[in-house]
Image 1 (tube, rainbow, N blue to C red):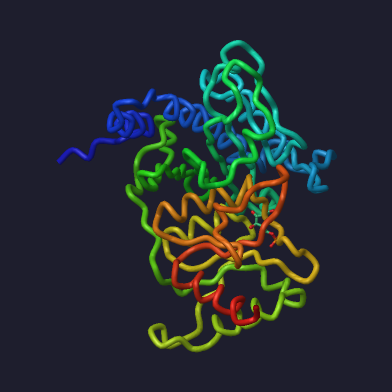
Image 2 (cartoon, rainbow, N blue to C red; image 1 turned 135 degrees about the horizontal axis):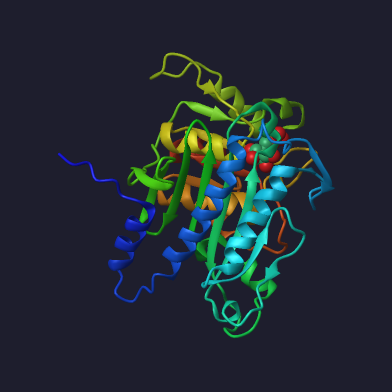
Length: 336
Ligand code: P6P
């Protein structure tokens, strides 16, 4: 039996064929993003060897010191997407404002891309998994003109596609459209992302909770009650839930997507909007989790329905197996 390798290109072209009106432009942007991530992957894999670790010295808009790899990844994505025929502009978690591509091709391109070029970069020095997160929207501004801020402040329900690359024990690209979620593993010997996790589904229930328990002192009462619930003995498991936290959203959510569970970064007494960014982390990951049958909430509303006001705004997030997210929200509703 031949187990034919299905590359990312094979797969996206085949998906395009299901839509007679599709132009293949989305597939082309996915191909461009996968190229940039292969370039990033090369550096991530040898970070310990190359003088690439160590504070770059600059700080990004979040006031976080930029690791050299953050800057490298940001530039790799911008350079590839600037040359893409179908991307009119980008916004990056590492850059203060969006970037309009003003050449004659780009001003007539239909899509914009937002990305967190290297999420979890504080894990680089300890060789823990890190990732790239991306979102693809159809522009709302007039074709033929440079993109505007409105193109990057669309809510998550307007997403055309979203995905991530996790640089871990293997390098995987996972992306979602309305047709579902599919995972591709990089085969280094041929430099291709090959289909390895078709039609990924999020379990309705789980027994893993993932949050930074170090913030407990700042947690609101509802979060403390949910934490207490996770640590009680549960009938099926005959034990408390397991706590897993890598401190890299892509890695924690990739595990949640595969094993089930809940990831939460709630608001707390100090940070009323939590820590994670709506446009660069929460919306793309929520789009993927919902496409896989999971749920994602701010605690009071669906993450994808939050109307972005500011490019770098943050939201609280409870995301993962539907029944676990509902349970977490029930404690917030009781408090309200
Ligand atoms: P903390 C990484 O810096 C990140 O943005 C996410 O990838 C991760 O989930 C979170 O922050 C970790 O934050 O406060 O637990 O270190």
